[in-house]
Image (cartoon, rainbow, N blue to C red; front, side, top):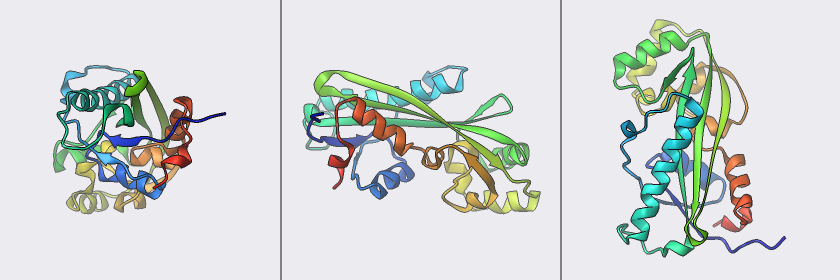
Length: 211
């Protein structure tokens, strides 16, 4: 199979964790946060919600690139735009980032000892051929039976306030996760295996994106 030449990857996200995942995989993306207003999307199904949000974020950046409204020196035809969004579904409820420390504390009281689904939507746009792929990956997360004191100590670090699902498995929150079933990078915010599959579906060889 003949693959198309690699392009500049633009990550439509301000998430340092997502950028770090790509960097660890040998891919150095340009980051252009979309600043998309997530309240505009009202979808009850968690999988459809994260796919819609990921697509909207990628599309906002794509349109800005086409309008030459981004402060980067990249031509639209030579770029791929990746948008991502994650939520935690647990007990039939969808959770994104907690609004404040009190919400984070209450949420952890509800999550401890339970099993949740971490869903991450991925949307990859190839402007040259006007093609978009949007996918969702789900990873099962088993939460430990932590004490109120442990929850309070964790919330005071500030870490859960910046994370969908109120925890960072690659950070202090990893102490409170018993196990996961599925891909661990998906829990961090970007499924590297799914991203590889999406690149290949668009006709690109993932290793050619190594910097």
